[in-house]
Length: 399
Ligand code: SF4
Ligand code: SF4
Image 1 (tube, rainbow, N blue to C red):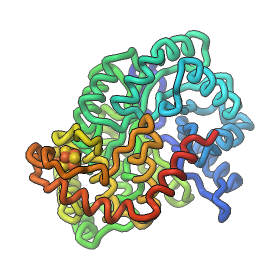
Image 2 (image 1 turned 45 degrees about the vertical axis):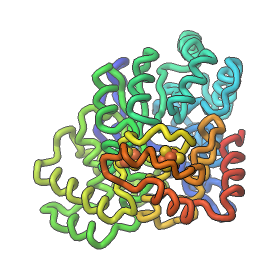
Image 3 (image 1 turned 60 degrees about the vertical axis):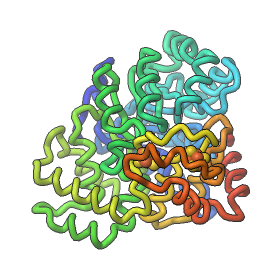
């Protein structure tokens, strides 16, 4: 296992972190505790020292599971990360209520890395107005949390604004070779690092979509490589190639994948990919873009939409449909993220579009945005959309 230093406190963190959002489940949908505990402990025994969970993962069951899995001396071997569910905060007292409940669920007296979860610009404005800066200062001062950070899913501009608004220790962003310009992107990664923040990466495999069903045309490019690597290994190595990256989270639930990821995490130094290898990844990225339904890079130039449509996020989920082996899972995530379950209750889905056309002229990719949004409605909304939104809201409010 390789380790990288958290810039502000010098913690030596394993470059691979164990994400506890996709743990193995039994047929009844509950976490398979015996198997998942073995997996988490095996990963820790083999060098992982960063474990990440959050309030809503596994319908609220991930945190109590992690608390149990880290008993028998494992808690002391890791830095533990969890997150304040920012979309559920209505007043300052709620922040203490959630943190104190999380300490109980996780059976610990402190959280090493505490994040304000899933920020976008408006959510940040809301929690900032309710006193989250003072809350984080207080929680650090009284020892309930050691380091304060945020995880992020908004635009590049909002990312820089949030980085500058508080004395953060670290942040967590979505990053992979298809998301260089999406959300925080490469510019955000470099900006955060330039401000001395450690950067934890989520979705290095884009929710597994870069590995589950690899299109033949992409496979043919990977097969040209001089070294034989799986698509997952290429994707991980590409992220770790960036020296600004501290930890890469992987939501692992398969023993073979855990062993494989641990092996790669023992070899992936910054700047270790050769120019020819980076060119190969670039070609794979371009091929994916050709194969995707819409050539959106996530640049946000089309935003804001006066009707409230989150255009790049609609297109991200639409494109994921091309890659996903589980379309119903993707439809659920579309309902969760765009139906208002995690963004101050504000719906942002495609059918809010009134076809005014003002976004299309701003798109550097010349995408017929209103036209493509009609297809998004067709494929990702449909008659059971409201039901999925309700289910997602319940899932994200689960205590
Ligand atoms: S065409 Fe639709 S998505 Fe574009 S700005 Fe108008 S309402 Fe928003
Ligand atoms: S639709 Fe066009 S302008 Fe909007 S985020 Fe995508 S590429 Fe950028």
